Length: 115
Ligand code: 5GP
Image 1 (spheres, protein in one colour):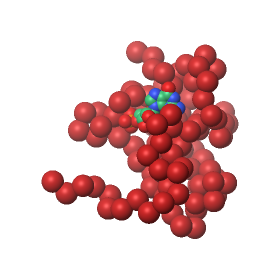
Image 2: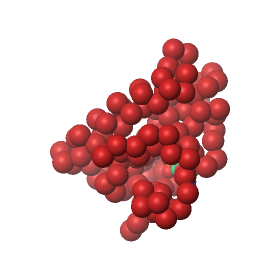
Image 3: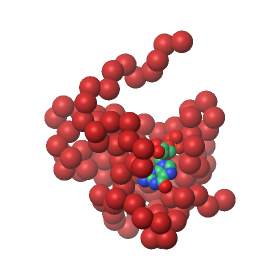
């Protein structure tokens, strides 16, 4: 089933796009968790990490290439940042179009809350 991210790719709803090429699109998260919070998505709709296949290798590799480029452009590469991909319920995934969060611009603290 199509998600809001497909509508952003199609230009049907607005987004603050920071990078685009033939395989991926990147735009600012609507509810940022840090000064820089960008979502990088493959243009081909893949629901979750569980659904990736060898055919997605180029697009998935491109997510990292785009992340490094965007981090440099945002001026956060040297201080550092975090890349996050959530999967399904325990991962906290809300939008079922695979996406990488690029989060930075402040110290992000420990990777996971200890419970
Ligand atoms: P998830 O929890 O699935 O890993 O992350 C989904 C992210 O998508 C959330 O951080 C949420 O704020 C963001 N998001 C949801 N709907 C929209 C939207 O319509 N536009 C933008 N730019 N971000 C969205």
